[in-house]
Length: 239
Image (cartoon, rainbow, N blue to C red; front, side, top):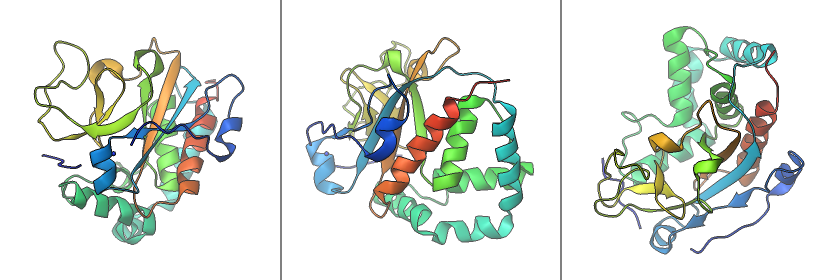
C-alpha cells in the first residue's frame, strides 16, 4: 500500500533522563525528517537511542511481568483501546498515510488482539519482550536495528523509484513514494512496517539502535518513557 507523503535537516537533541540510561551508551537523539515529509506532517518525529545490548532469552522477572500484564488485558480493553489518546493518535496517522487501521492494526492494538487470540502475552526472547513491555506500558511502538549495520543518523523520508529495503542485492524493492526509515546509505525499514532483513538484530549483535515514531497527539514524555523502559529491560541479564 502506498504511503504517500511529503521532513528537515538532522536535529540531534538530548531527551530528558534518557541520557542517564547507561554510562558509555550514546545519547538519544531526534532523527532527521526530509523537508517534504516535515511540511506535510510537522509533528512527526523519530527518536533513536543506541545502546550496548545483546539478544538472548528473557530472565524470569521479565517473563513474570508479561504474565501479570496478561491478567490486566481482556476483551473490554481491546475494544476500548482505540479510543484512548495515544492509540487513537496512531490510528489517525495511519489513515493520513494511506493505511487502514482496521486492516493494518497499529502496534498497540495488534499486541492486545494477539493476547486475546493466544490467551496471554507470550514470552519470545529478551528483545521482543522488552519491545512488547515498553509498548504495553506506554502505547509507543519501538523497533530495534543492529547498530553495526546502521550508517549515520536515522530519519524519515520518501522511498525512491527502484530503491531496495536495505543494501543487499536480494532485498525487496520498494514502491516509489513509500514512507521509510533510512540511514545515510539506504532505507532500513518501512515506516510502521518491515525492517530490512540484514539490518535487524541477530545472534551476533552486540549493540542495538532503538527507534520509535512520535506522531501528532503523542506526548514526548511517553516517547521518553518507552525508550527508557525498553533500554532498562535490555540491560537485564538472563538467568
